Image 1 (spheres, helix red, strand yellow):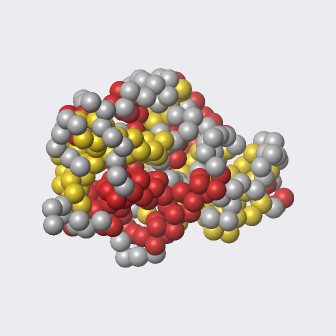
Image 2: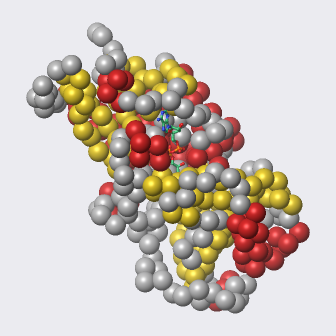
Length: 338
Ligand SMILES: Cc1cc2nc3c(=O)[nH]c(=O)nc-3n(C[C@H](O)[C@H](O)[C@H](O)COP(=O)(O)OP(=O)(O)OC[C@H]3O[C@@H](n4cnc5c(N)ncnc54)[C@H](O)[C@@H]3O)c2cc1C
């Protein structure tokens, strides 16, 4: 039987999750990943990788909850396995504190994370400027470890890797039976989707090994996420800003805000400053269309626009991309436009 040639564009957490998910589930497909940048140079590599969903306004909550639960369960199994260290996936406990009590005291994902509860008065005493807090254990996935591990997992089932910038999806469709577009903020150009925009994020990687619990303030503009080799502190959320240069004022602001929350940080040592562009979009896009090439129709499955929670939703949206691909392989395509 001839193998179905599938091309995945993008080697961030969304692209590699989609590629591994397809290659491991559909053995009759040969999967190739093409990308301009691979680990350690993707946006995903610098993300703290804490599992915390935000909400997309026009996507049914139940679908968003399913994306999160499928991702959480898949990565929890990795965290519980001997692969955890190499993959950079582990449980992380901490607090999400609020200056005002939020409308949604119990978020839709509260029963997916472990041990969700409201903080006690005794715990809140550490944060005199805050009125309310949630305590829970979630996952953390450090992509600078996870992506190389996923590449290995892909190669183990015969997946191929190509290092190349793509300029035209139609041209690719001449050589492949299906394309999965996971190009993150690059989809603004590649898929000509003007709804995609950069949300610039700057963080500091610091040495503060005494910190073990995460701490996130309100809307998530200020946070402290301890990791395996360093602590990520942030952040910024600059909508429409393409600048990849480190901004000194941003760094000073981050350090000041984080020290106010966690005074022990005044003794920390800054190891690195990092900037990344979140793939912003009002609603994440997991959708299929067809490319018309030389009289036949090639399915194009989009999986991009994860904003600030690409790691959090990576496996769940990859499963949806897999379903759309599977349907395309068994359904009759629409008639080609000549
Ligand atoms: C400061 C910061 C902190 C974050 N913290 C978290 C967090 O704690 N938890 C969380 O869940 N998320 C977090 N995020 C968000 C997360 O990083 C993104 O949602 C995620 O990385 C998106 O993954 P992606 O694979 O879609 O994009 P990317 O990682 O950007 O990968 C895109 C891929 O597409 C390729 N590509 C693009 N255009 C082309 C082209 N024309 N040709 C070939 N290849 C192309 C790129 O080279 C790359 O390989 C954070 C982001 C930032 C900036």
